[in-house]
Image 1 (spheres, rainbow, N blue to C red):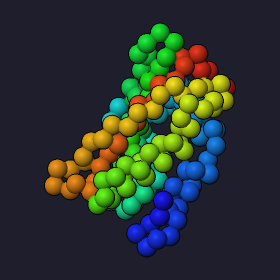
Image 2: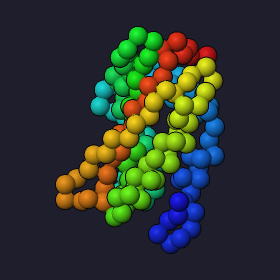
Image 3: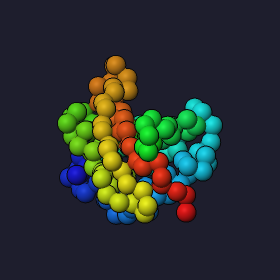
Image 4: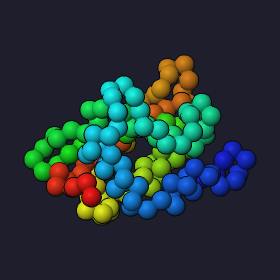
Length: 144
């Protein structure tokens, strides 16, 4: 991934440099109920209007759901601003891959599924997109 100037994208490089502890720490906060109240967001990266690479938003409050026996669901968004939809999607996927380490053991947690779901942020601005990722993980994951 590169910036419009052709340089390596620092945000993508940052997320790729993180290890399984990022997801472990994220789920630890979710499980401990430490993400605050409904309507607020945990934010990683830069504000959507300032970034080409993408930003990650995790809705606070009610973001974790028990949806099937033995499994829980967490959702987060990667927001991008890129005139090329496919390039924006690729950046979002790269960030999500680095953030969740899809289907990779993370501590005692195991991500079973991470699916992107595209939603245009503003009808008049096709370049601004939100990609929602649904992460399913084992309910027997425990906060260390």
